[in-house]
Length: 135
Image (tube, rainbow, N blue to C red; front, side, top):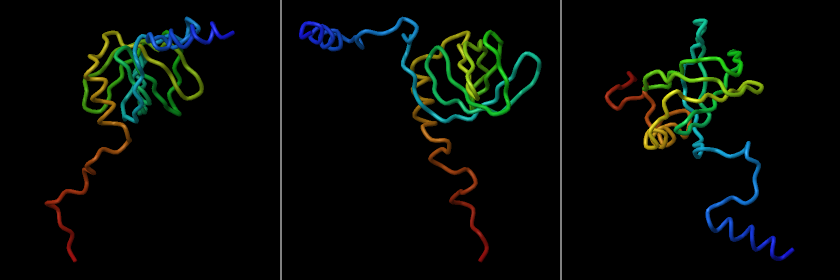
């Protein structure tokens, strides 16, 4: 019993997470965020979605109206970025996982995480310092 615990501790210290199922392995770390985006299916149907997490290889989106199926091709257009073509890999309730055709650079994924850690940015666009309300 003690040798099993020691083996798990050693494997954890060596950078492994211990025993795990192969289906649960991730290629890259997911970064949580709340980023608005538009998702377009090949049928032409487009819907506003929220990107809930991102990694260089893909993302998880949430939408109440979009009905996707695994294997479908989509174009995801996050705020301020070009469209990211990809394939839906899984769907569950109101969420779907998308694998990008061309992985994002790690620095881009990290920048998106920092920029969209909350849904609203640090600066509210309709409240500028130069704009004064009449009294």
